[in-house]
Amino acid sequence: QVQLVEAGGGSVQTGGSLRLSCAASAYTGDGYCMGWFRQAPGKEREGVATVRTAGGIAIYADYADSVKGRFAISRDKAENKLYLQMNSLKPEDTAVYYCAAKLRRDRSCSLDITPPSFYNYWGQGTQVTVSS
Image (tube, rainbow, N blue to C red; front, side, top):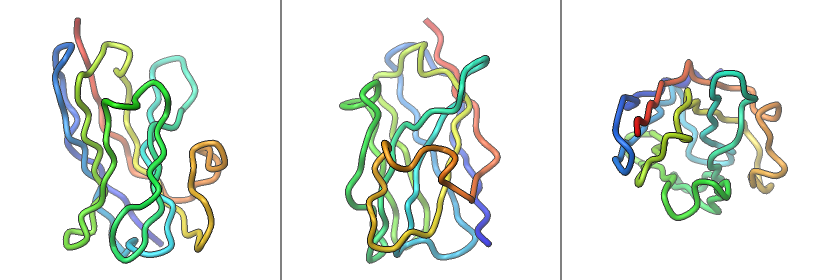
């Protein structure tokens, strides 16, 4: 069982930055698919970025087209935390952001084959609000 706890959400203006973190209660540095997802009011949960973990780091990052070039997913090996650096934020990025994980050794973790339904460990979510 893995418990995930997100932090770092908040309110920023258009063009601002935020860094989300996801702390895991168990080691997730090898063989996990991990990702960030978001859900805006009245919309379905959607994938933002995913990675595969190996040797404690995040590899093979995949991003939604809407965030490419603005967001970066990473993992801190020592802290056992997943991060999402969000730059050039837009009002349409406003949502609750969730961290997710699932053990999946030696397989791809790309967004197109790991939808929200694929993941079995979820955090409680952190609110990100971007005002114009």
